[in-house]
Length: 185
Image (cartoon, rainbow, N blue to C red):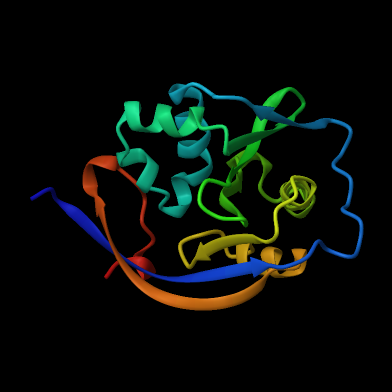
C-alpha cells in the first residue's frame, strides 16, 4: 500500500441553469484567452500542477500519461489558457462528454496572477464560453482545499449550491503536495 496523507474536505457542487443577466467584465488588454486544441501532456501538466499546487489538485497527477493524452485529444474536452503579457496566467477545462450540461472541471490562476483582479473576469470567460456552446446548463464543484475566494466567486458568477459532501482523500505522499494542517485528517 502506497503511503498517503489523508485529506478531509467539504466539496460543494454548484450549477447554473441560465446565462448571467449582466455582461461579463472585460479582461485587461494585456490578457488573451486561447483555446488549446489537444495540448501536450507536458504543457497540460505544467498548467495543472502550477495552478493546483497550493490547493491539493492531485487526481490528474496520478493519471498515466497515455490516459491523460487520450482525454486531452477528446473533442468534447476543451482547455482554455489565460495569457497575461504573453505568459500563462491560468486555465480552465470544460468537459462536455457525459451531459447536455457542460462541466467546468478545472479553473484557476497561476500564483503570480492571484490577487490581480483577473479571477472573476476570467471565470466569466469560461461561463460565457459554455453558454455560447449551446449547453443546457453548467456545473462546477469546489472544495475547502481550494482558494478561499473560489466559492464566493462561483456564486457571484451565477452558480447556486446543489449539495455539499464531506470527502476523505488518500493523497499519495510521492506527489509532494503541500497540505494545510487544517485539512489533514
